[in-house]
Image 1 (spheres, rainbow, N blue to C red):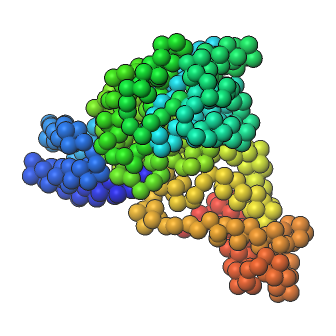
Image 2 (cartoon, helix red, strand yellow):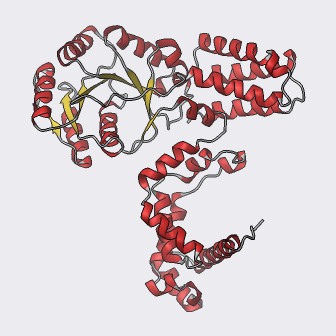
Image 3 (tube, one colour):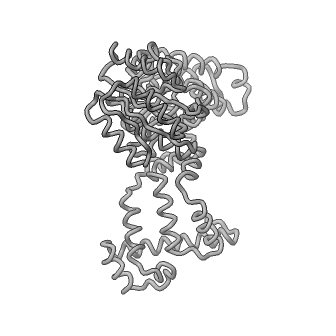
Length: 432
């Protein structure tokens, strides 16, 4: 997500930090690099010009000139302007209706039907809502079946009437939701390959009949600056309350995200970060800005950990670490918890102050699977007493896990080093 843009902006930031004094000349030099980085990331040129003008004006102000660390002041200005460009404050989802009604719209191929499932999952898990999915895309082949499959996977009810009238389906679904005490209704509407009068008329009819609290547009971030035209086209006909940017995990330059709020005044509320059902994040402008500038994103990492990690299990492992009783059973349990957080390289990027070299490390999921296989090939006694692992046992474990004796030796050695480090930390002797 924004890897190329982030790297270019971070290089510019490092350059300005190296200057002992900020002058108009070196500010122009750095902002030229920032301008090029934004344009190459497909940010709208009008947005880029305005952004650079604001940064320059503030960077050449008296506050920066008198600062003891002008480079750090420039970075703060850059971050604040980036946050402002992304929308400033986080735009919250409406959740207080009884029931709350959300209508999801978008072009075909934007990931609308998958996104509505992700959103329903988040509403149930994070907001403790009881969602109902409503199938109003009666034109696309297999659209209703796709939504039903998602509902089955998530154990969330899908209301459908087959190939009926979308307006009546939506109205009937709301009556059904009230009767059955659902507190959030998510309506999946039809898309087209492009905006047309027929599509818009149908969406307007649904909106006018059911008066949704939220009308959210799903936009494929891979479309670049054309995403702005899509949003403006929908916004002229519907009362859009927010946008959801999908496929931000793909090879996209990301410029659409930096231009949307400024050019359309439609806030980004969610971003799609993977194809999995948990691959939807709420959009925080400040967190995104710090991530782009290489400052990390601890809050998102903490929230992700709180969502997927078993707190009791984590506390038990931590206590055993402190008591010096941490064994391979505990290590396996910790490994499984870490896997729930997603790819390790994504987590590393969220940690503030991590060197560039560490951020570029690619962690092969197979490596973790191999470690898991080795530990699972041990007997429970061996996992609790790794000191008994001698040559013959290691050979049996290697054969049972399909790995080599060298890999078993490496795992045992790394575990011993980790235990030694824990012991030193417990005794107040940091291992560095």
